[in-house]
Image 1 (tube, rainbow, N blue to C red):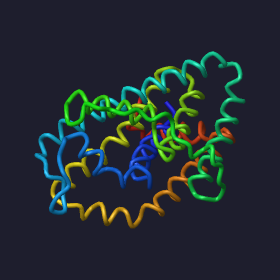
Image 2: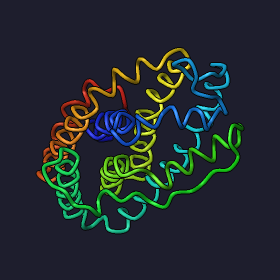
Image 3: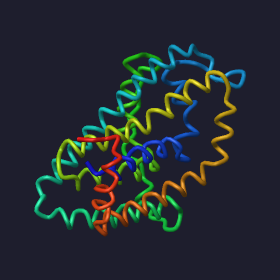
Image 4: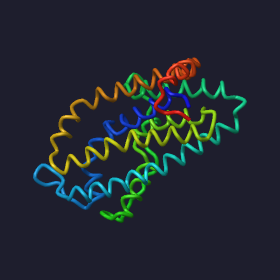
Amino acid sequence: MAEVSIWFALAAGALSFFSPCVFPLLPAYVSHLTGGQAEGGRIQVERRVVFMRSFGFIAGFSFIFILMGASASLLGGLFSEYRMYIEQIAGILIIVFGLQMMGWISFSFLMKGGKQFEVKSKGTAFGSVLLGMAFASGWSPCVGITLSSILLLAGASSTLTQGIMLLIVYSIGLALPFLIISLMITKTFSVMKKVNRILPKLAKFNGALMVAMGLLVFSGKMQQISAYLSVFSLFST
């Protein structure tokens, strides 16, 4: 497993959550998941309900993301003899995505979200899973750019297991802050106000991280760095 790719996937998942077109919508997502209302500077709902429904939402989007990773890995495996070219193309595209995230370039087609699915089963356990699947299937532009980079890495991975692992780690990176802050806003919205102030800086950091990863993938240096970091690995396969 490419150690750099794993850590990048984890960071990309977390930064996807803190993107300007995902994080500000968190109260709406939590309200839809739980049926709670925003009153008195917080979401009026039991934290136990938020915890359980959030897990359903996480399970839903993780399932779709992992399927995407498996599909990308299988497709990349069909062209394994051209892996070097696939990695170089992937590196270029990841760099472009990063520059777009930083605001240095602007391609409107990269900011188009996928098809949006309406989930009518509001405030139910099954509905929370469906909402998570809808979120993953019709992702917002910010998540789409970052997720596409992870899928490109999955397509360039050497095995199906590695590709799936990248999307599992990406899902974990997205899930942890979602769960933590969802629980926090049942107490107060103050955390939302504080994080909103730094969202533009986080977007630029995310873009810079993607550009750096793209350069490593394109140059083939990522394998050398991964081999060195594997000595200190927390993710061994």
